[in-house]
Image (cartoon, rainbow, N blue to C red; front, side, top):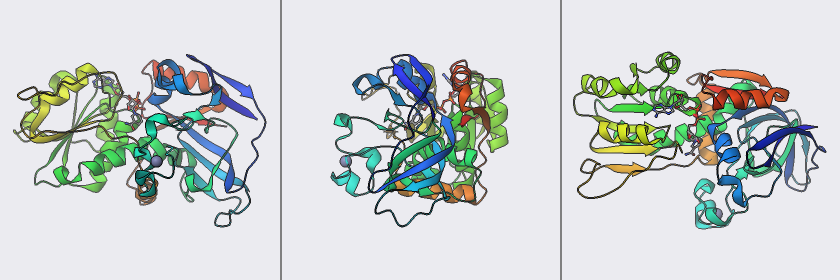
Amino acid sequence: MLAYRMTAPGSAELRDVDVPETGPGQVRLDVLAAGVCHSDLAVLHGGAAARWELPFTLGHETCGRVAALGEGVEDLAVGQQVVVHAPFGCGHCPRCAAGRTNYCDLRASLPAAGLGLGLDGGMAEAMVLDRARVVPADGLDPVVAATLTDAGLTSFHAVQGAREALAEPDALAVVIGVGGLGHLAIGLLRALGPATVVAVDTREEALGLARECGADVAVLPGDAAAAVAGAGGHGADVVFDFAGAQSSLDLAVSLLRTAGELVVVGSGGGALTVSKPGVLPSGAVVRVPFWGSRPELEAVVGVARGGALTPRTTIYPLTDADRAFDDLRGGRLLGRAVLVP
Ligand code: NAD
Ligand code: ZN
């Protein structure tokens, strides 16, 4: 079968590999769709993969159809459509035992961060994984379903983490970076609460997508301060930074209201100095959420089934994975790129 594998730092290529066998408690999926995340570029070109064994198949955002069941798996059926909860935990620590594998106590010492992140993932014709990482997702377009597992789940977890601040009367939320994650965050803010949403991006075309997803206002970074002032006058109750670059982080801090929440999701290399007094307003809360839990993925699937989330996708055949990665790298994509075998 074909698989898109990271073979060396900075290099990924399509390779012909054996179809993986299921072990006890495992499931084999025929992959239907696999999203391309900006984190895949960070893995490929940054230091994240330094501790992982190469090569491995990329793809941590996957929808598939159950093709084979390993010994002992009795609560799934061949042919069922599912999505993959890909973040790894040790499975035994108190955090994992509480279902929060994305915050495993042993995260820093695990041999891989997840499926497609050090272990074979979904950018392939098939994949094998433990039953516990499978979430039923029948009835959804598989391309849409794939995007829910990271772009949707990470956004959901980030928004839910700030739910108290977002429930304030006249709450104002700012979303910086309207890409794969950010456009779904806007949809989730719309679906889950009453907050006014100001969207910010450096690309005009992303601002159009932000408005389609339900942003009340969508502006370039230079116009963000005026937009936030015009939307309430006190600053933002919550700023979500889906870029995480120095310029976006500086902007995010400048837009924050006293006792506001800064939620940094993007890993764009920006840094923030915390000091008292300092750049953060009094009472500010800083969060750095990572991905999301399996129960949260089930909840996101439910939100999508209800019709409240409409991911914008561009479909590429798996054989065109290089082109999809190039388009993401070049800032030519709107929403999410999804590979289809
Ligand atoms: P993407 O490339 O699809 O979207 C990024 C968007 O941000 C683009 O629209 C881009 O124009 C915009 N942008 C870039 N720099 C900006 C700036 N300085 N100001 C305003 N807008 C800016 O990327 P994505 O797949 O949505 O991922 C977003 C970020 O989140 C990446 O850094 C990725 O690695 C990270 N990520 C984090 C988690 C987590 O769990 N914390 C999970 C997945 C992805
Ligand atoms: Zn653990």
